[in-house]
Image (cartoon, rainbow, N blue to C red; front, side, top):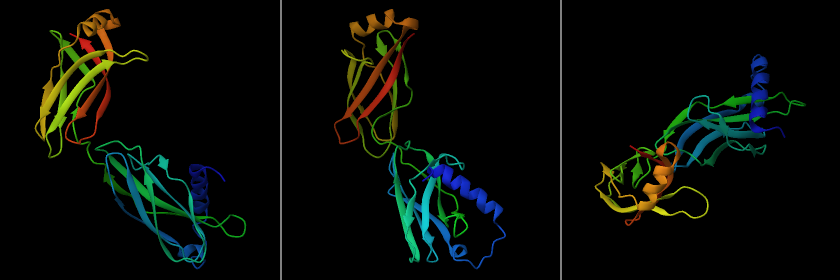
Amino acid sequence: MQSTVQRFAMVSVVIAASAGLAAGSAQAAVSTTTLPATSVTTSAAFLNGTVATGGAAVLWQFEYGTTGSYGKTTPVQEILAGQGMVHVLDRIGGLKPGTKYHFRLDAETGNAVTYPLFVYFGHDRSFFTTKRLGLNITSAKLSVRNGRASIPVTCPGAQTCKGKLTLTLRRAGRTPTLASDSFAIRAGRKSTLKPKLSKTALKLLKNARGHRLGAKLTAKSSVGQPKLIQNVTLILK
């Protein structure tokens, strides 16, 4: 079978050239409806839709992406002949928190041998992934002044962000701790944490090219919120 994108791209061309075919065929009874996404999280969602098959065998998939051009697809799945209205869904993952995504349901009938190929595009819908709860860093470039790193953070949601933050060297092998400090930020507030860098960190930073040092920031919460792990750059000012 051809890849998903190639298959539906080919079919859409056939349909554009076959717009004048009789509407009374079994394939013409097929229709798709894109339904709202469900179980949306910071990185995943279930895409839903219905396919009125008209009794025909139908292939279906979802297109999705951060624009109306989509760009990604779910795997092609099949509805066997002899069924009527069928609810379909598929889970997508690897999404970005707090981001708008577009999606639509596509279906295909026919085999281009005994029946002409038809493709049916559902209407566009969109949803927002939820924002990441727990401590968030608002900039991956951290300035260093007077031996302290400035780390701008926010605490979204309705629960105080509380725990311990650690900066370690970003490299394979031995990863010494560059700085460590506790944090407690009220829900919905912004703050700037200023952990004191170790002597090792300051020495490495002074010897670094352009006075920039790659580090890994880890924030572990003590109140059941997700761990924050992010690559950052320390910049000596």
